[in-house]
Image 1: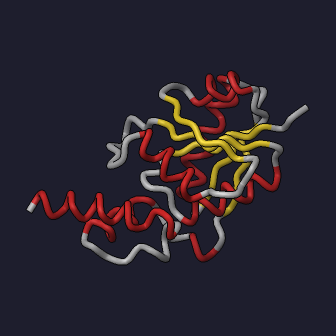
Image 2: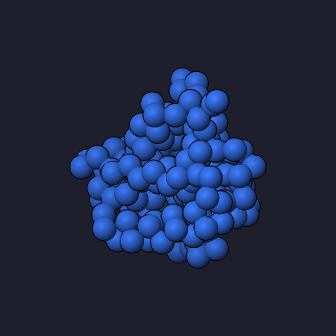
Image 3: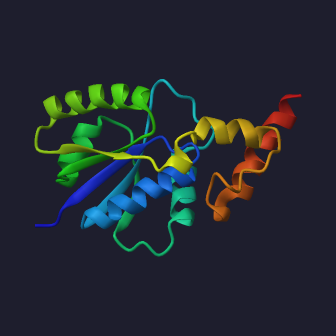
Amino acid sequence: MERIAVCPGSFDPVTLGHIDIITRAAALFDRVIVLVSKNVDKHPVFTAEERVGLIKKALPGIKNVAVESFDGLLADYVREKKACAIVKGIRAMTDFENEFQMALVNRKLYGEAETVFLVARSENMYLSSSVVRQIASFGGDIESFVPKEIAGIITERLYKNQEAEK
């Protein structure tokens, strides 16, 4: 039986930290679905379709990774895909507290999937999409934070938005 994992997130935008977690998950499971999901508490800069496209550009050559989007309950998506795991990256204790609570909720909603936490590498502990958005919006260099294939796209969008608001 194929072991499928879902790696959900808002990915607005995808960072090298995300890519590291996805790549490591791909080594552990037969198939990994990177799921661009809606977070009602966030207001994304990029559309779901744009985020899917950015992730695909950032992950060339990883054969067992697919990228999709979904606007609904994660547990329902995981059930539909018959996944055995939900993979989440953890940077700090605050991440763990939030993700632990969600893991318990997801277990209650769909107990057939385990939540697997992968600890961020030390070089990515501080890295977040919000940090990337802030640097890019002021025209800063984000090439050491995001895949080089998409750095220009991110900076162009965010810097233009910042300039347009002035």
